[in-house]
Figure (cartoon, helix red, strand yellow):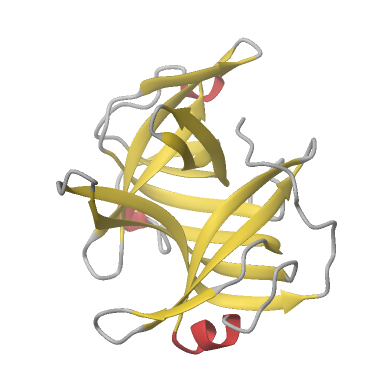
Length: 220
């Protein structure tokens, strides 16, 4: 992995830029932009992953239609509006490179997280009979900040993670995925929304290595 990446939160994704870059926010005079990356799955479908990138990295190098590979972190922050508090998830880019094609990348979607369970895992069955356990993982980062990442384990991992407890230290490997779902409003209107999470392929319970993250969700 590229240097200067926090070792408890590492993401590598490759795909095609499918949106124009839009200004997101500014921190200490540094501007950050948002875009969406279409990342291929093995099933010939795609995950549409939101990416946040600093103007320092851009320098007019990324445009809609470009194929890129980037390394960074999966981050969360709170967005406050009249509709209430919403958890926003994004891949925060640290470095990137332009590609001729995404096919040149063997594994275009990889994530590793080392964090702490901050909500009792919830075991459930999908309408198609698949076993799933929802896990909310708090991943520490510097300056007393934390990222809160929704994760999903499947099958045998789902049965195992159902027994985990708040505060358990967990290492997970998997991929960042986007998932559409339907939500019914109070008016009866049904709208389609998108959720982002980590689909776990491998997991390991560890002895608690660091202090459990208890601070609020933080952004850049």
